[in-house]
Length: 411
Image 1 (cartoon, rainbow, N blue to C red):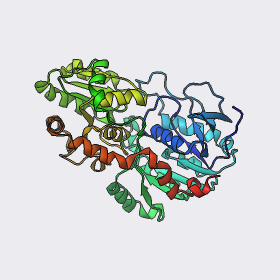
Image 2: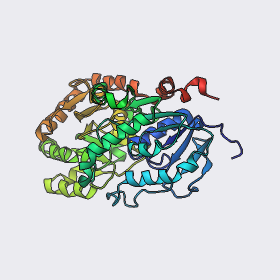
Image 3: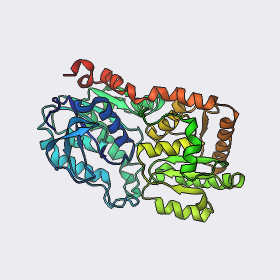
Image 4: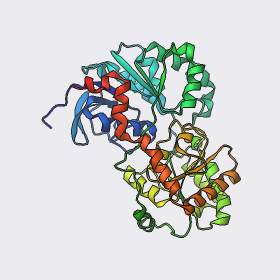
């Protein structure tokens, strides 16, 4: 590569590797940001491949264009199906603290991040402009996969809000529904010092996720799925907060009506073995398939092949996977998580289940299948709602809220 990119307009700190297999909403958002702004961002992130230099800026490529990149080192566990001994947030925070002096050597001090564990470290330094995104407004420590740490939730929230106010952000984004944003602002008004949150949902890539009725039967055959029984799909990490037990318990009821029905889990995580064991205990092991982490293109194939998308989470920030399902024209059945009322019009393009009773959830799936069989109006509504979350609008929307990314700031 001989052509250097222009001086970046801002630094983007990502806890996940956008060049690796996407895992989680934060990494998916980083990919969308790089697609939208390219070399206007300088990327700080881990490198799961282990092939790039660590601890210094180097020139790389993103979608064939040059981009500045800083590798903080790889800290992903080799076995993705097990919970790391030390929380990844702790390791990530330590690596950023170690490398911040070197990170600041690039000629811009405009900074974006969406990792609350970094705020205390970032506050120690001066920044020309700071933008922060809440990847959901639920306290991440309160829902930690490390139960013994949950008692720290209140302290974590207090420190997070204080550090955020101390950073004097020029833009605060929130990937959450408007009602949650209003409630969060009301509860933290004094501590935030008047800073307001902007509704900023996570987007989907319309070049990958789109409807394709002609592909349904093709994909079912290629994936060896039955064509005369319902196919359900759930996308996300296999951990307790995603509520996979509810999905399996509902599947027990659904199996009575649809003996050959299938539920595909697209994802992996520390609960994989527990999920398999519980499936066997419930007698539905033959009705599930765990696909592991897949590329966006392979995820699209599973979405297209499915009749219904399932979300059984206890909490979500703004479900990337559900927006992708909508973009494929899918009917969704979801628990009452953040953003769900913006994505599902109950009884029209899916069902919202407000309790965690397996029988209730199973009946909601049956109702959703009836919506699918009745007409194509449910699919049309999903596609209509998905348009508001297209990544094609990301650059324009973000540029209006944060000056370093505005069209006027582009060199």
